[in-house]
Image 1 (cartoon, rainbow, N blue to C red):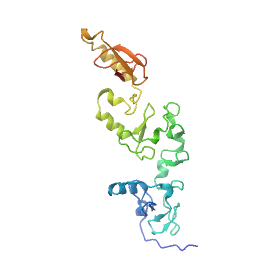
Image 2 (image 1 turned 120 degrees about the vertical axis):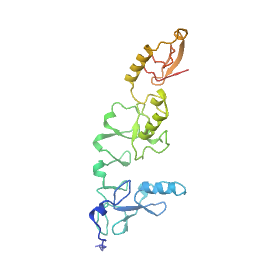
Image 3 (image 1 turned 90 degrees about the horizontal axis):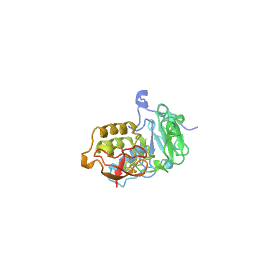
Image 4 (image 1 turned 135 degrees about the horizontal axis):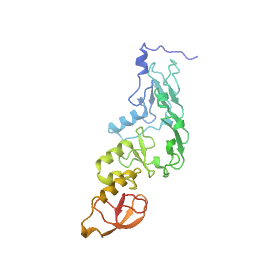
Length: 265
């Protein structure tokens, strides 16, 4: 039987508060790339990015050692310490080498197809094989599939979406973007430009009420006589149909789908 090492006297609150601003846990991982100890892979990635060294990320599947932060025993990854028997966290995934004391509250689950742990509860998500990721169950029958949509970088910040720890929004067109980046994008543009996907220009969401309001405004804002019979060629960004419609300074409506998300050609 392995000898149990004495653990320094610490309050329960101190022990339970161990960890970083990403996760609460009682062990540090040994980065396989540089041999240094970090609370989590995000701490490592941030440290290497800010140090001026060549930025690189940890491959979590290659982690072979952790250090208990109570007795400082270096050991293979596991649920708890082999020396002092202290549990490292309430939630542990041996496939991801992932520990989080808040995992049960966050409803963390491991998706075998994604190959990583996700937050929100297994019953609340389904894995879309075409999009290559877990999506909320409420959009299972309504979302637009885009091959490997989550395997791309955010079109605004260019950061990875699949492993992102920040909220990702799935747009009506099927493209994906960080929620904060989408908010920033909408604040940066005015008019219809702020309502379009930055990748394909399809409307971000369904805007039936907005189109009805634009109908009203156009009806109340007649063009000068010399422009009332001017026709212009458009293509609808939503349904891709080309049309010839009457010109109006407020916008041109697609006769096929009623959207004002159109462009003149």
